[in-house]
Image 1 (cartoon, helix red, strand yellow):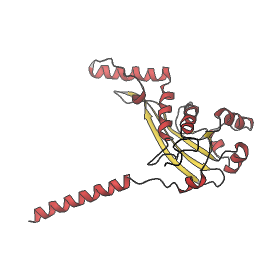
Image 2: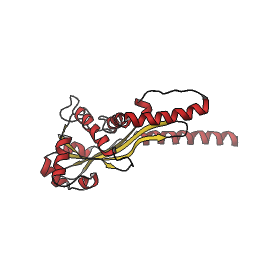
Image 3: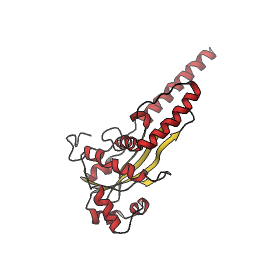
Length: 223
């Protein structure tokens, strides 16, 4: 009887833990500030680069405009943003991101600003395999109030966008394959393609935790 009761208790606790995990997973982002702000235009700043690859900032920056535009927002042209800061002596992403929201609104007239950050960028050698990894995060801030409207992250690998290279030959073949793939990633700059997928995931619009659709989207207000 005791063993049977103990088993029933363990089963009940397991079910409770599973339900709790499901509830936690299903939690949604608080969009109150986002809905109150209703931004129409977004200024995208150069991502702060936390990797050793010097091309990471502009490799990711070049991919951020499209998903925002597809989500229904007007995006300040990257070339205009970049040249404006250069004319004012600011070229480092960290310096640019330290400019106050009030000043950014005064200069560019946008409703909100995106502060991106790159945490992984480039080829990763994994003994018997090699792939390109790009990971980034970002937060969207209201330029009038300074409130954080939304924040998220995205990650993608070359295995999701690249071609399969297979040289065979067991363990030695796998090692050679990894080296060949790493060289191929470097030669073809696969990071740009992976960055595009990462940016798409990072700035995906819609539930449960993506951006809200902008006023230029036919789905505006449906979320």
